[in-house]
Amino acid sequence: MATKKVEIKELTIAEKLDQLVNLQKLDSSIDEIRILRGELPLEVQDLEDEVEGLTTRLDNFQNEVNAKKEDIIHQNEVKKEADLLIKKYEKDQMKVRNNREFDSINKELKNQKLEIELADKKINEAETFIDDQKVNVSGTKSRIKERKAILKEKKSELDDIIKKTEKDEEKLEKKKTKIKKQIEERLIFAYERIRSNSRNGLAVVEINRGACGGCFNKVTSQQEMEVKNKKRILVCEHCNRIFCPPSEDNQE
Image (tube, rainbow, N blue to C red; front, side, top):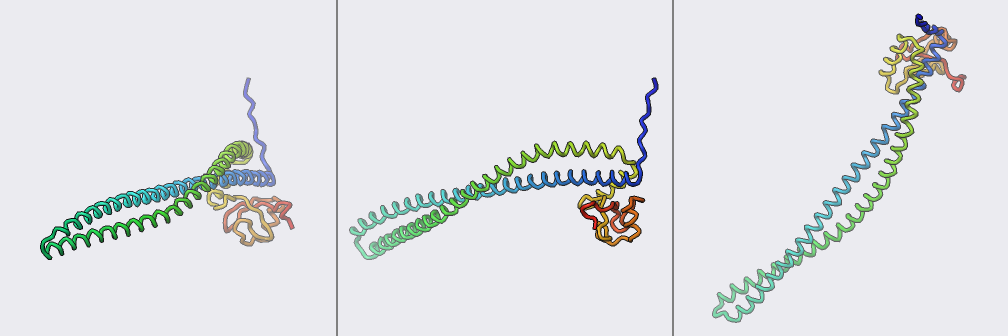
């Protein structure tokens, strides 16, 4: 038995325009989904980068504080050694036999006392630094906690949107495929070429108030009338977008 050939009904100009308008609406809806999905991953990535940067900063603060604590331990050891030497020199001073020995020991005593003063100064500076860093550490920890909470929320939002939009996009793509099958290839090719060259993805635009809805250049009253009556498929001579009549909401 011979297979019956399915004939595709030839669309009128009005029907072709209507289908192009429907195709544009579907594509615009798909674009909106992809834009929405495209912004959230960037927000999540920015937050992850910020948390990573803050964590690194916190680690640096902690390392600097630990280094200062080690320095304090070292300076206290310096003071102990200097104190022992001072006691030794003071005993030696009692046994000197001449002024030269006395002056020599006295010089060493002064040097060790200066070592203690310098160590005390370094300890005070380190303790002040540690106190200041405590404020930075506390502030950074709070910031990390805050950003992590927002990150968790954004990730959850992104997961929900992905789940939701995947289904919506799939439905829209199926409708788009069905409509494209009803439009001749020449028009589909022209539509997709115009859309790819348009920053906002609009290949089909309305004529409103005598101007192109894409580039806003004026169109002739004759062109506007032909498009309104769906007598011809016309394109803008400035931006090459396909004209369609204004929707009921935009009609004057």
